[in-house]
Length: 257
Image (tube, rainbow, N blue to C red; front, side, top):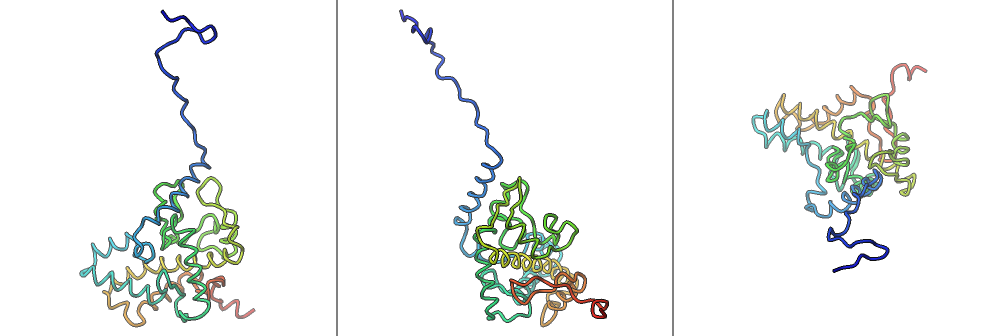
């Protein structure tokens, strides 16, 4: 017969007591999702991770509505590449891709891929590999509105984007990027504006192809669509390089002053 321990009392066979469930703070969960996002791209196909593609909604519309979906999609992709280059060698429309500023833009694009694409996506659609695990979701640049940095609507000014990158967004997975330095943040902000313009133009090009066919984007057709978009929204006046802030077109009243 077992005798009870003098201090612990009678022995029981119920086993160890269950440990209380662990509670994770929002900060620890945010860090975990960021780490997941950093590690996930390494598992992606190399070509897929570094090649711009059309948004799934664009592909769906062309597939369902274009008489020849393959030709229509190719026309949109080729037009975007003529105007903006590729994910590895981006440039602003009507700017010499070999210009030193565009070479610097390629370096900025590489930083974006390393620091931002796992959440916001390579094209800025907000659909990076980490996005399904994040709440709130990463922002989709193609919407053309930035509630945090441009609460009044439309595109933000470059300085507002830089402040957002410096400060991050509390209660979200958007971290502070001040460690990259003011100059680099300004370049990233310019690149975000390029992605915003490119993704918004994509929707306009899809509309043009569905209305007039793939030949609508041949020659200067895609550039005309861009000019029409710029006329509708003066904030889409592209800078000469990634470090300059897009300037609105000068109105007649401004010229008179």
